[in-house]
Image (tube, rainbow, N blue to C red; front, top):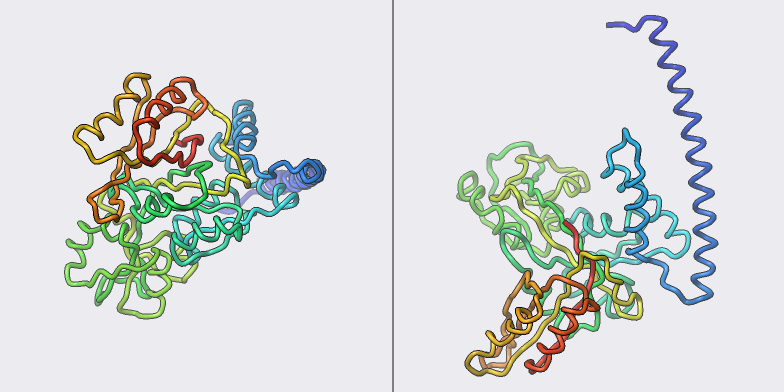
Length: 366
């Protein structure tokens, strides 16, 4: 149906109005960027940290609280995160180590936390992410911690044990796995490539739809997608970002066995890069401990938490690899390390431990 002259005139007038508003927005954004640069100069002179996730959260919370609409709060938050990321890049670009290549969920988590202006350093595995962050090649790192379907990422837990980095934030992503390949068909797929966690999270779908295909573990889902772009008989399990990155067809959408499939990523850095974030009112404290090998020792670990009303949200064991059947226990508790009940519980807990290390105390996400 063709537009009437009146409709065309009205549309043209609205477009002129939008163009004018865009220019006003651009002018205001540049004014904000200039103020951010001035702030950066003061921070540089004082030696203050440039990136303050608590400040980012405060600004976004204040903006969304005063949002009159029609923009949704989630969209306003995303816009402001990018504005602040771009302004921060003018003050001091943030170097962030992530699991590569481009298109990983780890990359997506980093972009959600730091914004699109962050300078991402792509690593072959989580070992390299920890090393780059500990060596200050990257100011921050993002690593997978646990999945709602398959549990903890064991390698990340092991790396925390002796690394000098600590956790300063987290990102929880709703993970949707897609089957990607060169041609838009499920026929003649011989190999499916993905990270071991993704293969496990999609095992039911794969058994039903591709029972004869080899399941081959690779360092990341994006690496599986990259390799799939080199062989027409291969398919990868990865994100829509990876599909676009490597020009692959999405043969099947959301093939994970659990619809509500989330992965939790930790943001790590050296303490001198960023100290423990202040209490936000919704925090998690992570620690790793070991206890003497005696009857009731593990039970005794839980008593201080109960006595002081501190809730435990995660308890995982990992072998100490000493050959003596000893274990390290990774514990998450609700609350900040400065909260009085947490202080009292951890003081009592530490007295029971042969090894005790706080991995971080940081705001949690929904």
